[in-house]
Image 1 (cartoon, rainbow, N blue to C red):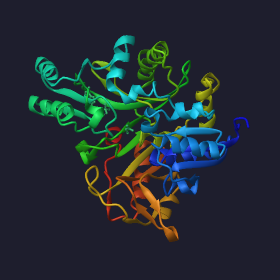
Image 2 (cartoon, rainbow, N blue to C red):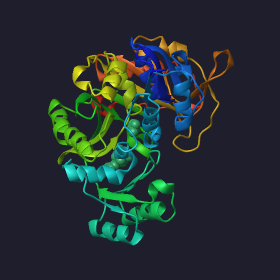
Image 3 (tube, helix red, strand yellow):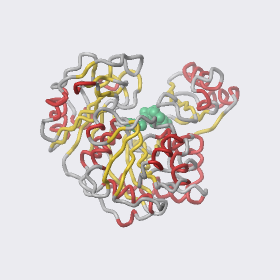
Length: 431
Ligand code: AMP
Ligand code: GLY
């Protein structure tokens, strides 16, 4: 029994808004005969057969892929990548999109990522790594504030403290190294220089040898309007990001992505997958804040809304080292995504509250309602099943037009237990 070939069955791993947006593109590809998604959500279930296997259940996913003769796997979130899902699938002869376990350390260990940047000359904040509290505090006092304290490992977006006072910085050091607030992920920390500027996210497919630059987007991390309140996974996004000019893209390619790809290969862990460069663009030029090894969520939603090419063909080419054969076309239109979250998020929130009006929102031209934390119930009812629940995404001639259309769709959704920011896109649109 040989490895099944494409066109064939494709398995998408994950169940958020990012995966719904990826699913919408993948099912359009002539290479996809049937799409499965593990675990998926109520929106993805309209495009794919959802299977109840958790995204982190590496053994369960490999068993499923073998049993169902899956020809290609697309991994959405970082956790299974860091756990070695792509390695395990590869060992079973199943090709997959995404970096292997070693290369996933670019996101899985902030210290590793900083060391790669330092060794290969990638511009980023000055830093030091610590496991010892006294040494960390001595460094803090030598540097002063503002300063940034980061748990080394994956901490579900909660491992970063931008400290404005020495007390706050000391508390963050103690929380990670003494109180083990982030478990093993915080047994080591990175302390780094505070960078000023405007943030943007840039994405590229990387096959180990070639880079296909995608486009940029801007996220809104804070939960509240005016960028106030605690950080979240992202409350909304838009693309294009005007701050990412052609000159910035050239700099990102030459100074960040190329040296990282070459450096990873030289270190014996070539990177294949999507590289998400979190950028800080300021007076000091373009600097790398962080790498992620996956598409951003909700950035992916606006990227996929603008993509006008065969996504799956490009993901397969990435895995096969043929990215030089791929060109992507993008719609000239802007896209904007508004996240609807359960009241209380990013703190405690309720699950199981009913959402109505989804069809009325989706029917609007140029609008996609991507599901994140949703669950389908009998009778076609949809209930909330997570913190970030929907990503209402619209295309428009300008970002202002896309914003108007997205909020028009949001206003058709009847979900008293949810909320959203009403100012997504404010930087691009102004008052
Ligand atoms: P990260 O998870 O590394 O992206 O950090 C989360 C957020 O913390 C970023 O989106 C930035 O807003 C902020 N941040 C991280 N590193 C720095 C830094 N060196 N200087 C200023 N802000 C930072
Ligand atoms: N939206 C930011 C992220 O996906 O990490």
